[in-house]
Amino acid sequence: MSLGPITTKFDRALARSPVARPFTPGQTQLANIGIIGLITLATALGMAESDLIRPEDRPAWRVWGAPIGMFQYWKVFAPNLRTLNWNTTALIEFQDGSLKSYEFPVPGKMTFSEAFVKSPERVFFDEILSNNVNRKFLPSVARFIARANYDPKNKPVLVTFYWYNVPIPRPLEKQWIYRDNLPPHSYRELMFTYPVSTQDFSGL
Image (tube, rainbow, N blue to C red; front, side, top):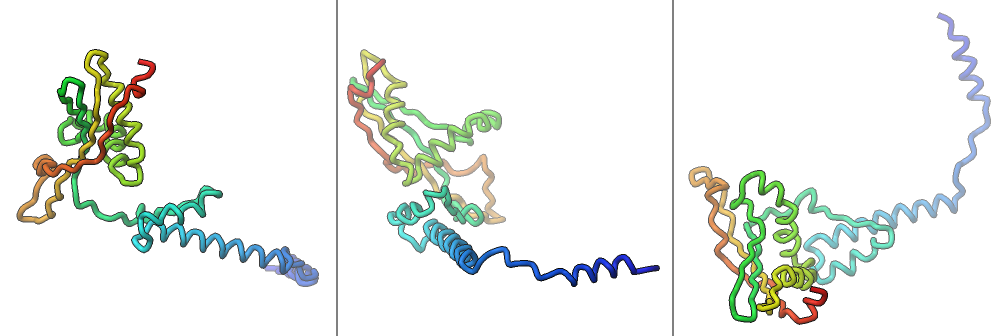
């Protein structure tokens, strides 16, 4: 088999002059600085989600990635295991002293289809609002609940959020507890109390 054409192409390639560098030294240094800066920023943002940084200091670390929309959340890959089961409730007090309790969706008290349909609502009230970072939204939610239960003859005067929880039983083989037999959420903690004002009912 003849190798003539291949040899000719190879010789032609060797005869070509060296290819010019695509970047100048200054451009190379600038690119290296950008890469190092990006890695440094990613490391700092990753540390902001770790226990190395105090929770109250983490927003100051996260702000560095805000201009380029960058954030890191490494716990997505290795989250802390949950040790509690919980749910939240809202207690509404009216002018005459009567109380109304509203329990947000609890999967164990619903059918599979109901739990699926109400999953976004459950995530919002149980997972998002109960997080310390998101509790700043509780006044807005309290106003919404007060307006939803507005009665001109007996107005809501106070909305209180409670957080019910219970430790998750250990997964012991000889004492296995199935999901339907998990202990009730018997420990109660006060989350937030909102005194309802007349301005909250404006427009009703």
